[in-house]
Image (cartoon, rainbow, N blue to C red; front, side, top):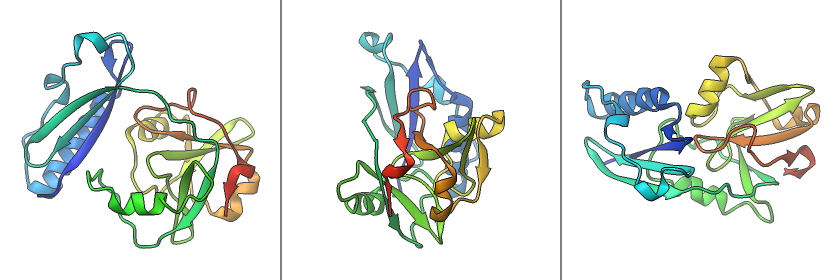
Length: 199
């Protein structure tokens, strides 16, 4: 059976952007399994007492049913350089538990900390996060990422980040890149100088 994951950030005593996680969780269940009974994930989640004052990565693994829920203390991995890799066939529109293809691309990073995936000539994502680019005082992100994460979705809705078609040749317009996902915000993301994006 095909399995999926939902990664939810717990901090400041609550689950962040839980409504967007519910949307994606239930959309995936309906798309792949025909299940139309919406589930409210927050009713199923319970952070262990010793982690309640921490930043916790909550990972829900599921198919037709929830297989397991893991709670782990989270620390941001330093990412200050990206190696561009090219793959026109990769598909990660849903948050699959199977990351074999992403991992194989990650292994092409050479001396960089992570990868920047180029699909059909357009910038998409890193191996585990959406990517944003700064131009003057504004932020932009690929409008067609491999996976539209809940945080970048929220940023788009709030107008904090603008979607754009971005190619490697556009990068000289920007001063820096950062990564964002359920666990990493613009504010706490490591800064990636544009010169550290290797083609």
